[in-house]
Image (cartoon, rainbow, N blue to C red; front, side, top):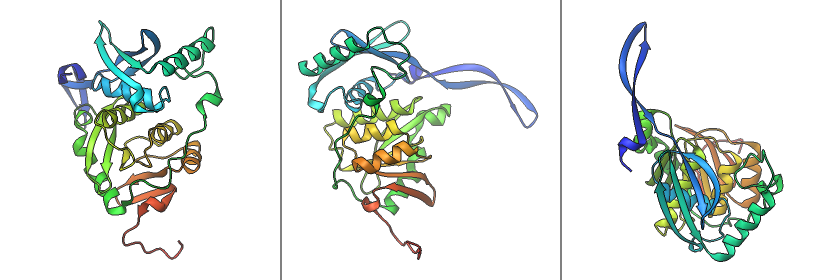
Length: 276
């Protein structure tokens, strides 16, 4: 995908400090992407048109449509006039489960979540991530936070996209994906790491967005043990992280952070606080 397809340019009027100028502005593209499993439509998402193979793999895994990455047989992206189709082949038992899910949804409206039948399906039990996983120092955490913006190339041009970054235990950003949708950015990141054959327990995820329930759930399903977000968490996300063994850090900004769940993976450096 070329930059020309990810970014559009428009002539705009920019007002600043009382001065009006006519300039060209760069705006992030957004297209509908249909997720299709073995020729059966599953849903349509609005996505930044880049890294769509990563998105399809990450969505399929993080939404629990398969249990293991190897159950995804292949992904083909087909471009259409107004958007794209991500056609995913999955193992036969998973496909039959998808068909059954669609059969139960027939005639329903207003479910609000793609392919989800009930609140129970959203709040489905998750396998615990486990007590292992990367141990991260506060220095590594804040080093990655400080380096994040230099990796956000699309956001630097448009100012409108979220990022999800894969960070090593030592604090180096190895992979970053951007998208207008925070869920999409995370799915793209998970998909990129899975397609690279990476062990998702050996590093951690840094998000530019808030840590909502779905973001923590996606990481837990994929087996990511440590999640940090620049913005706030939700109460449901904190409860989920505590229940399933995910270390959750939020308000991760320069020289500050708050640990909401499983602080044992975060190694505090030079901490002096008599209240702890």
